[in-house]
Length: 356
Ligand code: GDP
Ligand code: MN
Image (cartoon, rainbow, N blue to C red):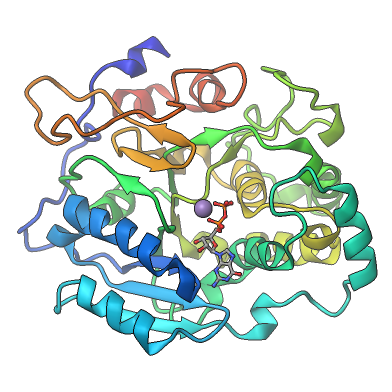
């Protein structure tokens, strides 16, 4: 773990694509923002930082999605904020992909959420809709279908350091299907039955289990900073999906889709408050080769309240001294919140480690 506190500027692999090279910006990829009209100022803040640190050089297109209609004021403001040459699309979400499905009983939902009132956002139907949409639907949206990779960006996040290579092409060239920055424990109350239901699915489909999956990371055998008996053996470790770069071909695969249909049928997106983060993380840990999951240790990022600020090499100016760690950086508070030590210990190969 200590070795990974050492300075980093970028992954140590050959063939990174730099700004200005012919292949720069050529991956089949988009930046995805799911937002409401009222998120305008906060999403502009996020994308301006992303433009400054990365996308001004690589010029990937944007897709803005909303369950309601974007106002012309919203769209105009986004277009004014971005360079004119940037491709931007705005889409609404089919209610079929967004709304609470008809097999959910609203009264039961309300009763159950009263009991979960200590859990953030549990009482907001829209939050449940959002988690379900990000778990099983965003990659089917007509505006996303043409893309292979999506970089999810949320309102009010920060990117502090220059990213001097094409991250999408890095993923493609190195056979990565998932990229994350932060990796945390979850509130067990929100996912009480997610793991037992997942085991039911595995019992039906034992052949789906990937033998090189990240199986230790999701087991409740490493750190137990709180009482995790509640989740019946799931560590609650999950990639913090507010930053995620996905190869949507994985999400569109039969196994992932069957898993999503199964979880949906178990109703936990509404009768509990299953987040898209633990759902995605379980799918990746069970059904993907762990070497295809990449930790972007070099990307400096905050989504309140957590921050990843890498130490930069002394001769590097890419952070300009701007990477101010927030209330939490991955190397503080290891016992309580951070699953990354478990990931490093059990799931990273020497080859992965050498990349840093
Ligand atoms: P948190 O990070 O878990 O606190 O959740 P957020 O409130 O940031 O929501 C996650 C993402 O979904 C953000 O990009 C939000 O803008 C978006 N989002 C959440 N709820 C809604 C909603 O009801 N409608 C739309 N269009 N976007 C939403
Ligand atoms: Mn957020």
